Image (cartoon, rainbow, N blue to C red; front, side):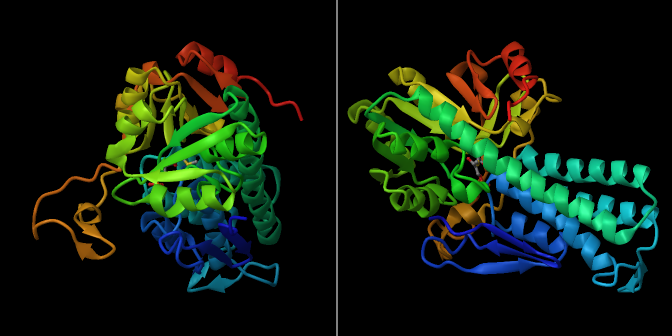
Length: 367
Ligand code: MRU
């Protein structure tokens, strides 16, 4: 079992500190939007869908901080008065700006914030302002975003596992597992589901320099799920594909443009090129809100550039000459043409192009 990633209780969000994994299971607490945003920025939690769920709760926390708390009546907290729809909306808009500034690439963060704001607007339009009822509506919405993510993971697991053959040898990158979501994960969810159907002979996880999500998180998840697996360093991928019978590469995504170009953890693009060379299908598993139809193609996706210290230091120790220049683009974009199929909770999209994406997104999920 993977420990809960987020535990919400009115006034606080307990967040599993993924920086300490796999050595220590410990939680940190956020009490408002700024603390939630800081946790996202500092990688306490990470993974596109999980960031979105945390952001939704970050909006709720801000409202709780600024509002009345227990009494049900508006009151003055910290010198601010949350006594009107206008004040409540202002609070949420400001919280949304803070949260969206935490990390730029994963669209799930923007999706969750915008959805909470939309819910707030709809509610405020329909009901006279009542702080407690308004807060309850937003808590429900955050809960819904979380449950939808969990359900989407389960469906992607089913669709993705359906693509894999018996005795599959798969390779994944970064962490697109339970730790990145509120459910079983996207890419790793496909692997664990396929494993439960006895379809997985072996899974390889690349270590994912510089943040080591593969080494610290994915291989830990795979082992806990009983999947026969091996950790490799990133530079072993070509050799492993050539010599170890890899017959599927499956990764998650942070943002997918309308044409299918996909931003995911740095190194994903290289793996897609290698997979094409070796004739290996390359699958991307991501929930539908990861697809950003507003962006025509991947060149428009903003790529987060993180501190170069994350490259020059490992576990707090300098591993390069002091003061050397280093780059740390945290994501790269894989062209749609290298992706065999997108696996979403609505089904499998292949070939990956705008027409097929729009068609699939318009489908409703049968309940
Ligand atoms: O920087 P991270 O750890 O947030 O990057 C995570 C990834 O790139 C994942 O592959 C992606 O978010 C998909 S998670 C289901």
